[in-house]
Length: 123
Image (cartoon, rainbow, N blue to C red; front, side, top):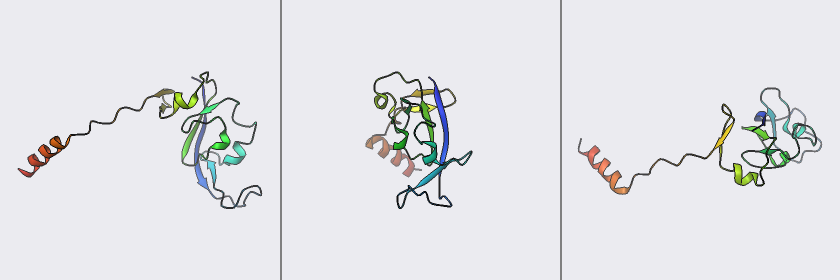
């Protein structure tokens, strides 16, 4: 699966407020080069049409605020429901794979907890 790594993003406060930013707007920039998110997602710049982003799954980069996250765009997605295909999946950048979240560890029953407690108290 082809993907585009858009980097890791952090919150910041610009030295001068953007004229088009609403009062109280939050800003973030990419860690490695300081590019502002709002400039980065300007239409026609860095996101291909039809690309899907994972976590949250959106088709419009303007719906994201990536501070504190890594942004990955899937540029060759051919499915019909990206949300269903990727929501809740785990992406491994080392292997470029998506997988289901492993099931939670077995929760012990009340009887098992009480047996462990009794064993601890008898020491």
